[in-house]
Image (cartoon, rainbow, N blue to C red; front, side, top):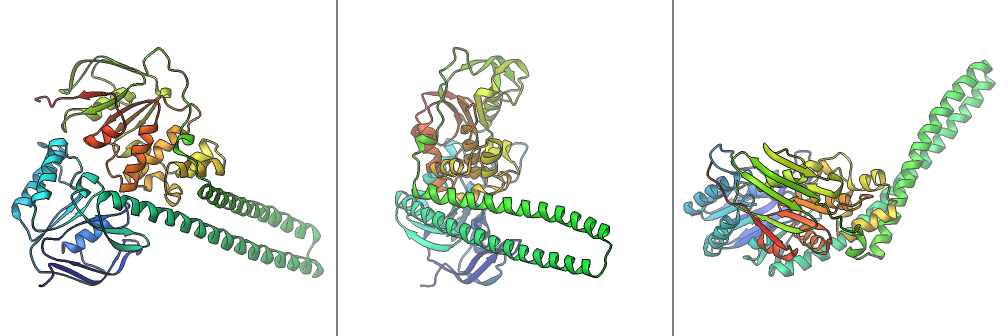
Length: 466
């Protein structure tokens, strides 16, 4: 039987030239269902576009013996539909078209609970070929074949979602050890380069002595030598400081891998609960979303649920103090609140997680590395600017920063925190929030996640007629 899809020696590169895939061979038979999983940024969406025939590969071939249809992650904006409604409409049209191979890129994004239930039912009944890129374990539980994509290469995994999670955890542990080895190699290389630079500077100094013997006026020579020494001294100091920091960080990371702190040790102690509310709304009205809403929040653990367009994000912004009500009053204590907006949009910073911990928060490298390790955050990502991380990675980094503040927040407010999280990130976030002893307000469509983090109260927002 001829395969439905066959790639041979497929090579794909990112716009900057970085290789995403090299000599990839993939065979899909009719009726196969496969999930592509991996960290954001490794090229999953690019691969899906090539498999769909919408993007040319940089090398190799893709052959498909049947009709293909791709539903992209990005959806067209509409003035009459919410993003969730637009996504469901696009998915409904794709399933009704019944292509031989359906390719879905993060199909659960923006879907509310009814939409998710509908999607799972359609995936279960689908009998044609399917390739889906997703981090959502509700989708991944429906599959047993996974194509695992990483910077180190690609591989096939067969098993259930829990077995996949354990396999990914083992792979990340190996990746962290490899990162430490590369860190040591980089530090040693820079040390050698610095020694070469110093030898060259000494040779230049010998040349200045010869210049003195040729009769250069002493006052001019001393001026030139003084300027050069000051400039060289600054350069040497900067280079030496950078090398010392690199050495300290490599040592701290190596130590944290050898002796890992439990997550509980990385969570800050909270002060005794104050009798006054942390945030309070009184008689709030906001467009067509709320009417005379009154709410007081202490250190409660609250789930905010409701269909798309019901005002969950607006409510969280009011409670966090980043949005003013059109009517009524809102009173918040920002120093007692840690807020992460949807897609961690309020944490798009130039600093890396390491920069933030060792700079603004003044943690020494050992304490910073131990904290990052306890949270299960990849060290390689911890050195990248927060703005360059995926929304899920940025959310996790933001939470680490918030919990390491000199006065940690008593209440965390999180808007759709599981969006864009990879498999391991989802598991780490769930564990963190389940152990977090403070107050928590979470808006999410993920019922399993809300149940797992032990929220005490549910605030359900209805979709009001506009």
